[in-house]
Image (cartoon, rainbow, N blue to C red; front, side):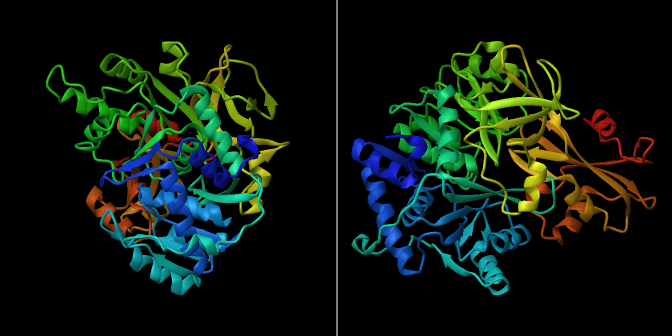
Length: 504
């Protein structure tokens, strides 16, 4: 079967035929599912959703934890030909209201509660304002008779996914993806990780992240078993993954640091992840020493990739790469993908820093707001906004960002959005929010403030002020510093690089 011309649903059916009894997934509650059981469960839930009016091209937004239930929902909506809008569970009223309004959501699916937050209550409030139907799946998804399902015509290039990221603006940006583009991202990951039927992969980040759905596609393509972690706990999750034979231990710096800490806490001779063969991930800066630590501790390499919500997995490190490249770079462009480095509107050669631009099958079809496309695409090239360089061997190093974005645990934080809220406090004359290197989070947000009075704010007071807004908690500053004046260049622009150097 040609993966690039196959829909997700066709891949689900093909995998169920190829390895029906092979275990597809297990979650922390002990629930398991084979590939044949998965296809059957998707059809039952698809029938239940169809009874609620969901059909081809219906726009369905959903927020669910990383459990087997969420995998079934994605498959069920694919069977119906719906347009899926998975939403990160860190988002709250402000972001979700914007998303479902722009996406023209017809049905919003949420859990009753997750991580202590009442999603059902929030969703009902959004329903009143935005006029959407709400479905609270507690405990199970709707069910119906698969015999009642109708067929529909679809191609892999049809828009089937709407993924939002915070980007560089206050409002999230919605990228339109197809089954073909997400499948291409999976192929890119596969080119470096060489995932097989015998592998077991940790899914430790939100399934509603584009990377989470890439793993669903990869599972259908390779038969890899997915180890679903609903809420990652450094105290318990690494051990659970080890007990379940994890071989591909994702998914970013904060998780890799947790694995190292958990292993070092064990008595000598005990192995936390005895079956691990790779640490695969990306989405956040990594310490140069991390690869060496993982190899020394677990005997497995760090395979980092680079991409964006709009262009997932544009580069990928490989199990065949030398150690120095694995430690310092994000791998090379995946097959079928072109990269170039631009400076002052001209393409530049190796080992020079500029904006990375990408062209390939994993790039989105564009943004829901077409006004964003004019800036994002140039002659078919997607402008990533990331600064980097490509060496003589094609290995990519990320050096910074054109626009002011902080990447905390793989999620973008708009500095301006946070600054606007902090500036509204009467004790703040000026503020600059910067990203500082953080071994656990990749980056942490630091607010640098010029105070109006003699008694400066405390971090708790600042957090309390921000809490009166609808800003997501992951965007709150975690460090607070004070200066008499913010450094500026001759045109008045704040020199954030000077602040990063001073406080980082």
